[in-house]
Length: 451
Image 1 (spheres, rainbow, N blue to C red):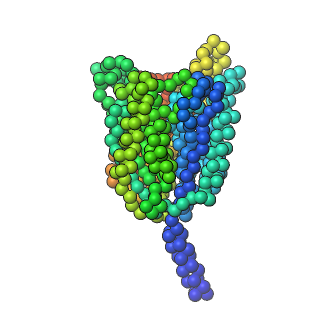
Image 2 (image 1 turned 180 degrees about the horizontal axis):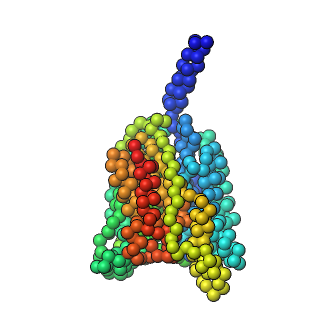
Image 3 (image 1 turned 135 degrees about the horizontal axis):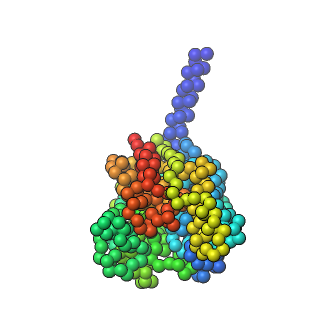
């Protein structure tokens, strides 16, 4: 009996050692997410396709359950729309939805995806004006099928790389304060205001970060992270992946064997307004500046070996405090008001959907992926850049990246101090939370980043 027990223990140790020796593998996927002509995009119906949109990302396979990271060229994915994306990709990858993180790049001529808000609008006689749910479901199903077919072609990951580069002439803080400490000027994505142009960048994260996965000396995928609204000009229905997508495409053209996935960082209060007047000539200039930064970050890459022991996934569910302006009876009244504008109806639907979801006990998953000394934090909404900077300060010993614009239902998420400063981002139209959100998210980040 003693020898049998020892044999079982030895066999278990051998299996454990064998599992640890198995390399991490990665599958990459890239699926078209371009809406058809005539479909609603952020502010108009799509009238042309300037360049295609995509849903792209990776599936990490190891001795743990698979992990899926996905970036979509849409303005936002919220509520039941975000749920469906995660559930379908999880099923395709053979994992759970808690191990799937879906983000948008927030291009303003891209589609919206929110089944909850659309249902409220349909219930009040306005279906299909802002959302094309049949198209959204089609893209989700196609992306899931692409993920499923990609997994058998997964390749070993032996090394992880990371590098960073300073970006000049793109990001600037949107919120310009007056002598009283209140927002005096909102420096949107495009600006011709001399005061907005001459004012310094303000609080931004000027670093673009690049994380790459390698099989020996061969790069498999690069993922970049940079915090800014990605708009140059928009609003007429000319579908585009914008200057972030054009920069991404240029990098892929330079390295055709490698998939490039870009994630928008905490850019809720960041845009190109200091460096962009909204003219068509500025889009390729902004794209070139970003592309050169992507290349510089790639060239600065430092590689290190990667094994199963270097991989860790954490999830912290949170509930964000609801804004005091979210009152169900008032929002229902706006939705029922035939004299209210379509945009007022949309705003009321998004507010009410988030209110109902939070009241029903639905939480937001904040997550982190550790790959050796690299930690990628995944966060919701149009998050202020201060959260990204705080995350880096929490782990100065690690290479910390952040992808925001995950669950989009909360809208803008400011710092507590910002809610008393005024400005668009913390207005009743733009946000669905309030002061008190900062300690919730800071605590979540501490848990995601602690050693």
